[in-house]
Length: 89
Figure 1 (cartoon, rainbow, N blue to C red):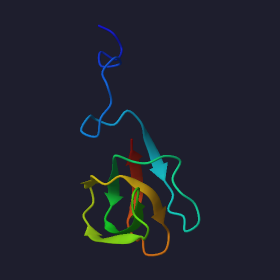
Figure 2 (tube, rainbow, N blue to C red):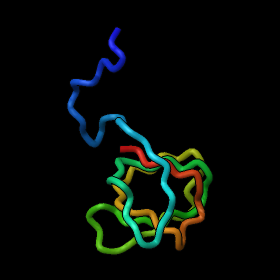
Figure 3 (cartoon, one colour):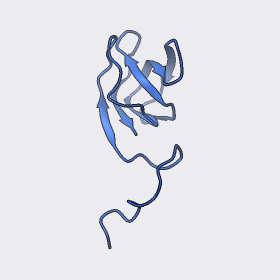
Figure 4 (cartoon, helix red, strand yellow):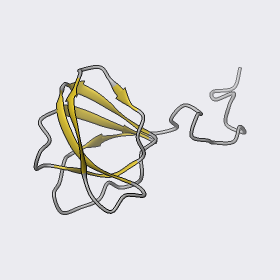
């Protein structure tokens, strides 16, 4: 069996993530790439900038273990109390 039997499948928003990266909230920098979703390891608030938005939005009281299905370009330190965030792309 090949290592990745889906390697020739096309990527889409509904396809599982092909990569994951730790998110360090930052007030001045964007993420290394847009996410398909964000995994929340420790619950709390997440202040983020969706990819097509001009302003940040705060997701309040996100429960630990949630996969937040939002394409984000930035996660801000100010206003973010959730931790152990992983970007799925």
